[in-house]
Length: 72
Image 1 (cartoon, rainbow, N blue to C red):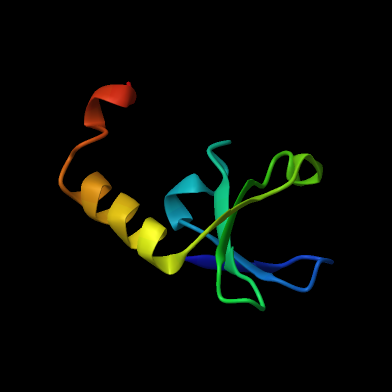
Image 2: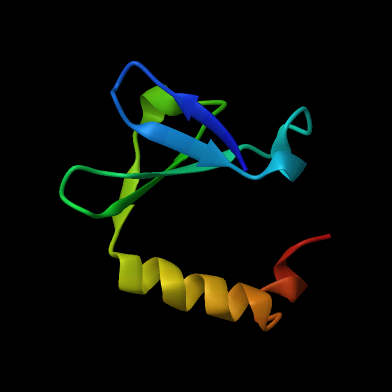
């Protein structure tokens, strides 16, 4: 993963596969321990906060192919 520390003080991370492809979803751990998610192409549009448990559940589903039908 590549790292990008934005002016908001968070250490934003995105997958290497998204660099230069326009598919730039980034994640950062907040001071409260939540995981913030944003579109790095439009950071001013804000972030979505998730608990670590919620992100873990999503990642498990993604690894298991539960969302494969949603992408081309």
